[in-house]
Amino acid sequence: MDWFPLWNSLRIAGISAFFVFFAGIFAAYWIARLPRLIKGALDVVLTLPLVLPPTVIGYLLLRLLGPRRILGAWLLEQFGIKVVMSWWSAIFATGVVIFPLMYRTARGAFEAFDETLAYSAQTLGLSNTWIFWHLRLPCCRQGILAGVVLAFARALGEYGATSMIAGYTPGRTATISTTVYQLWQTNNDALAARWVLVNLAISAAVLLAVNLLERPRREGRKPWAFL
Amino acid sequence: MGLSVNMEKRLGSFCLASSLEAPDGTTALLGASGCGKTMTLKCIAGIVKPDRGRIVLNDRVLFDKEKGINLPPQERKVGYLFQNYGLFPNMTVEKNLLCAAPGNRREKAELLADTLRRFRLEGLEKRYPAQLSGGQQQRVALARILCRRPEVILLDEPLSALDSSLRWELELEIGELLSDFPGPIVWVSHHPGEVFRNCSRVCVMEQGRTQPIQTREQLFRTPQTPAAARLAGWENILPAIANGQSVTLPQWGLTLNLARSVPRETSHAAIRAASITPAQPGTQGAFPCRVVRRIPDIPGCTLLLQPETANPDAPFLRMQTQDAPREDILWVTVRPEDILLLR
Image 1 (spheres, rainbow over the protein chains, first blue to last red):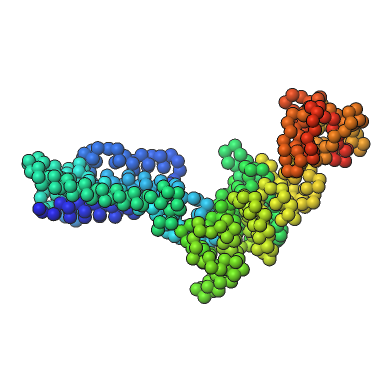
Image 2 (cartoon, rainbow over the protein chains, first blue to last red; image 1 turned 135 degrees about the vertical axis):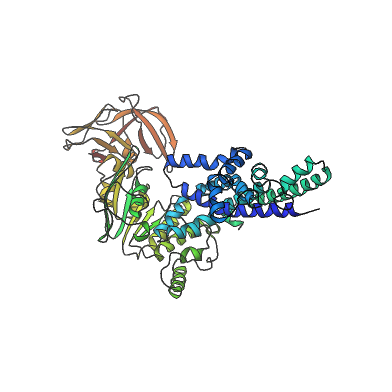
């Protein structure tokens, strides 16, 4: 059995989750402070990928990044980079798909944060940057961690947008989900089933991790008691 | 010197207009819930920006709308004890104190050791706030504020989160820990007893407006306004009309002779539940009331009475007695000097 799809899936999911982790947190923190109207509009735009079919996202990304499209053409001309149909093209696809998951969970965690703590820190002379890194993030740590784990899991399972932008090239762009589809298409049922089992195992492990992260809160213990 | 506040803030339909002079020592800001006490503190601390006015602390302008001055909370040197103490839940007691302490590492360590001793927190350095009792949390919060060397201390209902058996103890403790603080202290409360015991000056606040500062004796013996009387513990407060030497209470359909001239600007009269006494039927100045409810109280019993001449929708007369009367109609009287006239 060629393990490339597993490795490829993991690196795509890992890299996109890494970037989305920061992007989601900062978007959540920054947007919470905006005037209501702009906040509402941005919220819709940033959450849209959660409800759009992945194929639509794939289509939109191709319109943007394809070699003859605005951004894709520019990148090809300036840097000689062809953004689509390589293994890391899928990072764009998964990144867009999982961003709302991270953004929403981070926002939920920030909204649950007791703002009095920030006020209290301010009156003690502590800067807003200090408050963000030493108070806000640690207090919201659990929600944020749960968010990134969930985003990673979703990235592992991404199929639609990935297949459109990265295609299926064995040993180059194949991920677990595209491999399962390809194997099933070519009547290789036994191997498809093995990949399905691999996928099930990973997903179960990830969901278990999410549950472990959220458990202390459900039991009514202080979230930090777990950390 | 001291704290001088004169500002306005509009929040939807609520309008806050605070004017307050707090010299060194403890000044109470007394008012019912939702009257704008906490909002006033937040404006002083710089958490909320007033719409207009001026806030000055020891000759330092913290806020001045006209001059465009609005110091951030970090630079105001205002120690703010929040209702729930605002301790950082992700840090130990030690870290909570250290993050507020100024100076280099050695100075910080010295200050920490000194503070832990003074506030009787030794042995608790490594605990998290959730692992402390209410009293310990309060001591940590006060200690943390004092580490910062503030020029004014704001206490926002410091005892409201506690049950009554603890309240008393912690009240004494706050007084003790703050006794050597040289600057002004503003103590926000809706609890008259707490204010009387701890604050020498009182500013009453009603519906977003502060009233002139009074000494505690003035406020509790002879409150001037209905709001002040209510906060000072007068139970029966009714609209009144001056009538030469007597006062008419239209809601109860009563005219009481006070044997002294009643100021023309009198708008309300107040009577304590404890100054109402039973009388023989037909006695001069007494009036009959229907007993509406008998409520067991500590000590004795509180009666809700309805004067027979009262409007049906008038508030009941509250009376405190040692034992509940059997009869349904009770004649009561009140001494003229126990009737307080309010502007």
